[in-house]
Length: 224
Image 1 (cartoon, one colour):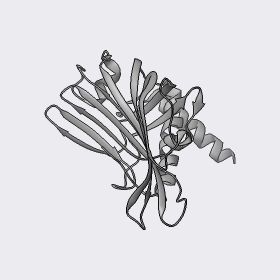
Image 2 (image 1 turned 90 degrees about the horizontal axis):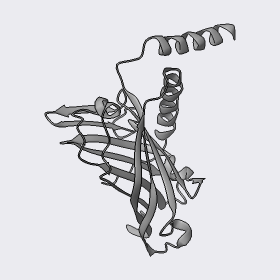
Image 3 (image 1 turned 45 degrees about the vertical axis):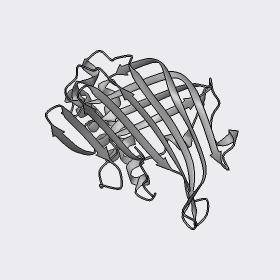
Image 4 (image 1 turned 180 degrees about the horizontal axis):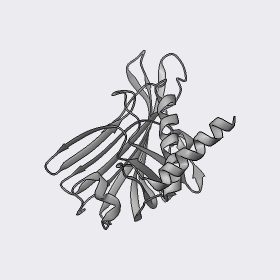
């Protein structure tokens, strides 16, 4: 027991004293939901309503995921599909209520291309039956950034030119048909970036790992 406590204390001290080369930061988008559309068996309980207030807080870890770079392009992809830890997670709150399903990330992609930052986090609910599966996705895009790689994001000014949307749909594999579908657009009021205190890095890294382990038991679906 003492050994475990000592090891944990040492890891925290190490995280504070010597930050890793990876950059961990949060991007918080706030605004309202508009253009809500429901189809199939979808009803008001499977989506949200126009005018609902939301907060989408992404945590990005550039040390996770599979990284791909080229002139003007930098991307991370993490999830069961490629066997890497999640590059991003999201906490999604609507009207002050945390949306657990939307935050149960099993796949993530973060990309910066010619000044445009794309954040994609997808989740899949446990199988409702042997056939039907419900998927959730949260997507945000911010353009006109000066950053040339993902590690520079927290050091630059964020543009207010942002857009995004959510998706929630159920698909039946027996009939190969969409049972229900709910979508909506994000109208952003503000975007803020922050770098966690060094003492918080270790806990965040552990959180990414825990979500990643759980995600391996779930089916991956990521829509563009």
